[in-house]
Length: 406
Image 1 (cartoon, rainbow, N blue to C red):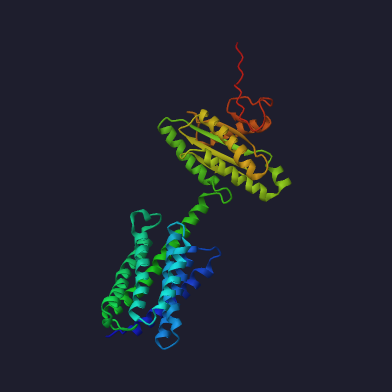
Image 2: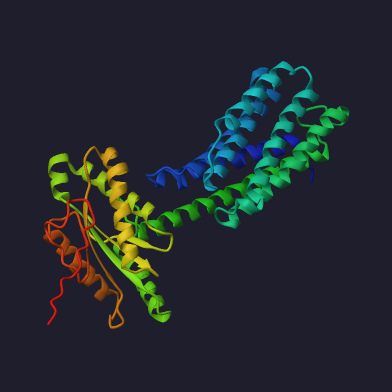
């Protein structure tokens, strides 16, 4: 069986058109949120479909401008692939890499239109560079920001297509008599069209895998993280904290628990509105995360209440965290909110006779209640007495427990 170039062109156009339609129906219309990566790949397929259609029409005798637009569309399709790759690798997109190549190809293609070899060389040279760079971006060791499966599928397809594209450019420049027309029967032209068609299908599969991986990560995040503040939700916090308690007991290490509650939070909602209250929670959680160490756990325990678990730490570490957090709220968060944000805090330490995390949290919660009863804006450690006149609000107050000699 002989596969002529025109049949391969038509087959490729049908293939990419059907795949882009299938993505539109199967992915875009079934989701309410935007997914930049899969949208960019769908745009790449649409550009491919438009490019091949315009080139086939120009070959049939339509105005030569269609050929120029078709060449620019093919180059633009690889630019859209670049956006998809950067999106799933979580890297910034440089707009110039998307806009400049198709514009430059369109201008040069129009200027050298009378020279078929130059046209082929320009378009295939740019396509080859784009494909080679994308293959390197996907396959290089530092690209392991996500699952290797989709990266290797997409990268292998691009790596297979790029040499054949460069091969067409070489023939057009150095052996133009062997590639005199768009539908030349040269074996390299036919092989390139076959491989390109197959690689577009493989690429669609690769980016569907990337899309699925992204969706799974989003679901895992929703299951473990509080949607407003970005810290752990209560269930996940308690699960991970139990693990830390078990490790502390096994290795005879200290562990502290700190409970924090925003002061007068209902008043913030009532007087400034719930958006201001949500903003206060977000900024407080951000400040708390920045104040803690890498191993520390922080989660939203209730409405405006947060719980911090400090592995390998005692009450001295709690004092330092409390002081730094109050300073950060005063100098960084307050100016952003437009009002002062304070909190009350209670803390305790894991004891040998504790029967689990619940006992530790209960004692820290009692200390927090003592801090609020004593006038708020202070830290109370288990076993201390929080006096109402011990200090001004928004400062840690740690009076010693009074003792009476017999």
